[in-house]
Amino acid sequence: MIPDLTTPPALMLATAAAAYLLGSVPFGVVITRTLGLGDLRQIGSGNIGATNVLRTGHKGAAAATLILDAAKGGVAVLIARALVGADAAQLAGLAAFLGHLYPVWLGFRGGKGVATFLGTLLALAWPVGLLACATWAATAAVTRISSASALVAAALAPVWLILLGRADMVALAVALAALVFWRHSANIARLRAGTEPRIGRKG
Image 1: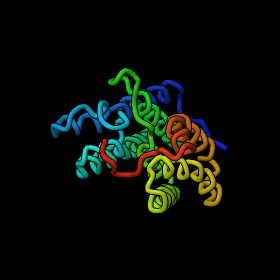
Image 2: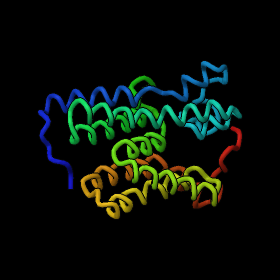
Image 3: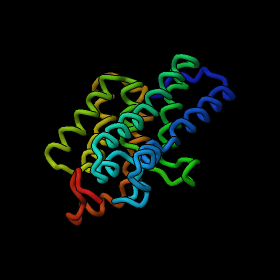
Image 4: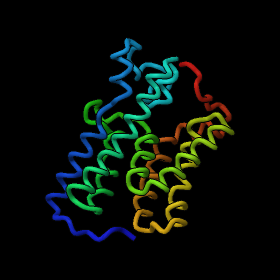
């Protein structure tokens, strides 16, 4: 199921464009450069997300990146819901997520979207978002592997939505989860080979 589509197409398109531009802001790159930590794309995995920022050894920068990347999805959803409607809110979440994955400011080479995925879920349905965050944290506590935690959280998000009676969001969650898995294809290969790095290892 999806929410009733009542917003005019032109307004939906404008909402998606604004959310995409917000999602495209590469906070990890901005923060590491501002703090003199170098070009994040040349550090560790080269990813622009919080896990790779942590490899610089600066926990504060990693925490800030995590919060701001999550906020991109959450803020896009909240503004779209308040100003446009529920159908636009889901589209805004998807657009912000795609903006993080394929940011125009970085030649469409972005991150893997985990924090933005979680922020989007928290804004759309906070109980589901909390369950997804708890899933990530529990898996991280056991495995100490960020990618494994992201994959488990993404895979279970549609399940939590169904269990909590939010069938209207399942299609979006499945789409986001599929993109998370796609962006983690190299991580999945390393997980199978037993060579995926642990959380906090410096690049």
